[in-house]
Image 1 (spheres, protein in one colour):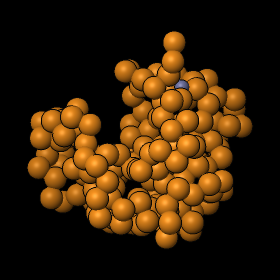
Image 2 (cartoon, rainbow, N blue to C red):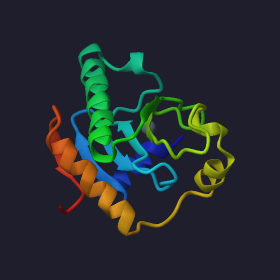
Image 3 (cartoon, rainbow, N blue to C red):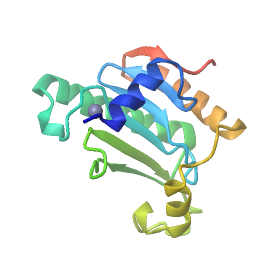
Image 4 (cartoon, rainbow, N blue to C red):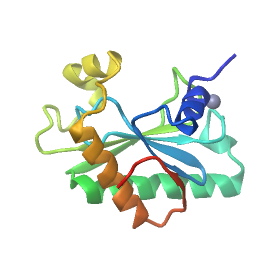
Length: 159
Ligand SMILES: [Zn+2]
């Protein structure tokens, strides 16, 4: 069976994902096509494993460290009120994180994003094509990743 997330990684490497930002040692940083929450970003493991504890222990430590550095880069880029971190993988059991900046202006600031029906509608429709704001966000995230404690193996954004 083919894995949706592995196929997505192949498209990133082929330069076919206009939301891709960077490849780190253990994962890909990609802007979510749904920017209802500005800066919503995925950090997807390069290794195809369903659970965090399936990663070899050194790689697990590096992966978690990189995930946190990506989250902090989002904080610096967008100055949200709160960051949300979620690894779900019920539909696509390949380890990936939803890193979601939450703002004062959120309609439902105290609940998970999955309780916001307007967000869900956009998310399940697959989001929007890239636009000027998503380009700005990708550049802002890459700029902050360059200042983070991560090794950027490949960049997919021109600054
Ligand atoms: Zn996979």
